[in-house]
Image 1: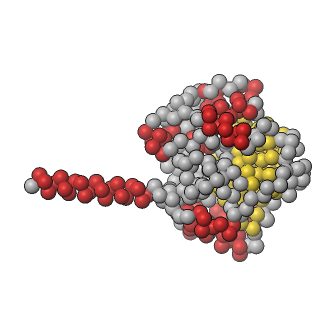
Image 2 (image 1 turned 180 degrees about the horizontal axis):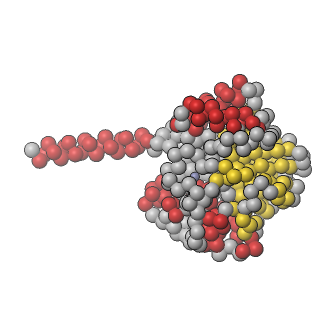
Image 3 (image 1 turned 135 degrees about the vertical axis):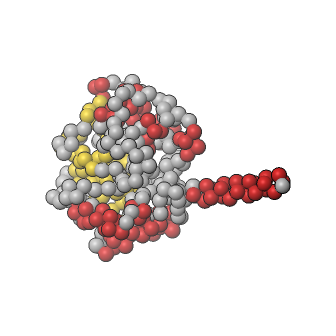
Length: 327
Ligand SMILES: [Zn+2]
């Protein structure tokens, strides 16, 4: 009898392990979309902004004289570490990525919201680059936890124009993607947050989009896929970087409204997906799609590919550390 019970428990355990294993696998093969890959290798100049992707929503903007970072999440600890322990920025990894990608002109760092997959490395990256960190009160408290000087911290002033070199940046309030797994929309980190810290300490504290203008070209960045009805009615952009993870997990009406309120309003000539890769792995040149338990990867790519095609808008995919010139 005992033997039968043990065998039954063993089988149940194996089924459970197989289930968990299948759920953490990539939701699809990004290489099926190679036809959409792009990588502009020519250098930036005053009329061509180079945008380089480092996975999740981390983007580097570069016009040859000034660089701006969105998020700057480089450490990307493993899922096991994130779920089981207090985590800490991998400073050697950040040093290496900053050096290998010539990030020696970073003047501004802008953070989408304070969840760890956006804000985790702000303290070290701000100190290392000497840039100004722009963020919500919660994001600034993460930087204070890493002893960033107050002179390098600047609280968001939504919808105000900010001149940094030849760039003009506007921070635009938005909403976190639906179904926030941490269920902490709007909850700010209201005391100084020191590392190591559990990932759940990084509470959302407001989500933001960015409109970056450069010599008349407008680039819109929507890191978290959601929208405020009518918010972009009068905004136009030449290029749109848009978070796509979780979009097709929402009802069809929501998907349609999301597209109409973003691509439909901004009318860009090119759309580039972001927040599609599994950020539990390092920022390599072979990013994989988000795991199955988070995203329906291929459905999300197909949704945007089909809709942009119908609207005669280019759809381009950046693999890790690859760039696109906006000119
Ligand atoms: Zn988030």
